[in-house]
Image 1: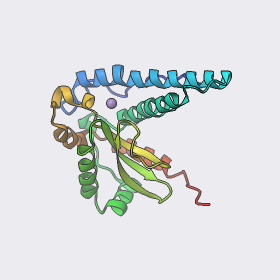
Image 2: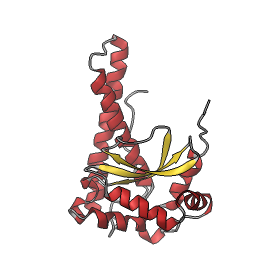
Image 3: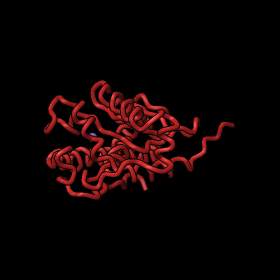
Length: 207
Ligand code: MN3
């Protein structure tokens, strides 16, 4: 059904990621910002359904843009919340995910160095992503602007770090680099591994 998306509940409380992400930021980010993307996606999907019914596509460019922006906003945040856990429960990556990281980036440390640098360097609002590049059967790091720009299509995000100012400004002000460096303390690698395992099931058809 078009326009039926809902804000997902978090697996932890708003203060669970302290001191690395503060409770007020989490509350506003989840209940206001993410809710806004859910609302925007639902609105775009309903408007597109109406456009198909009436055959009136005069607003199609704006609607496709809204679908891309708010849809990415909703799904990016859904992934982001899952990718984190309280620091007391932190465990380093292992198994197939760690093997693939070593294969594609040399080591966990060099992966983290590239990911951190890419996330810190995003111009304005955006994301750092670890993606499964199905066409090349490898992991890749992408730095997206806004929610959805300068990506590679046919890749599948398995881990995302939100570097919009709304994600860190209350606690870190302009110190995005400190936020990015601290974020590694709350990465839920088990969840990243689940997304990685699911992503590798998708085989790109090279023709
Ligand atoms: Mn955000």
